[in-house]
Image 1 (cartoon, rainbow, N blue to C red):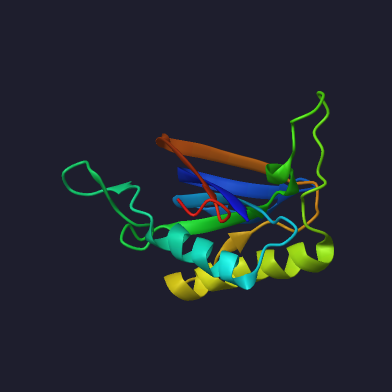
Image 2: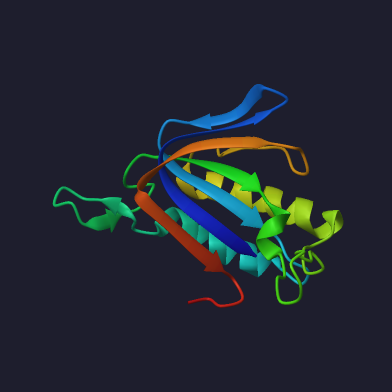
Length: 150
């Protein structure tokens, strides 16, 4: 699985002009599931998401997690995170997981983050044409890949 995590002051996702998920501040997370991803990958990434210290403390040092900061999470499924651009100019999505794997892992990720935070995770709708709006704070953007476990 691959995540793009952005620290935001606000974020929302709309489908057909209707807002279906919205947060005032916290993390906006793009979630890409790849063939071969497992529940262990999902749990590792959920832990990383909620415990990553990318919010400022009282000294202006990034030393607080989204939980410490009292923030929220907006999670958006995005299969294009697994695009292969090695050949040519048209991305290939051959490594993106099929719906049979991607939907359950995406939903499980959202539920695990929600459980760890003790609050609901806002989300888009898997496979829908969504419009995402956000105000990146910092800007702070982190990319995490469960294959690399760096």
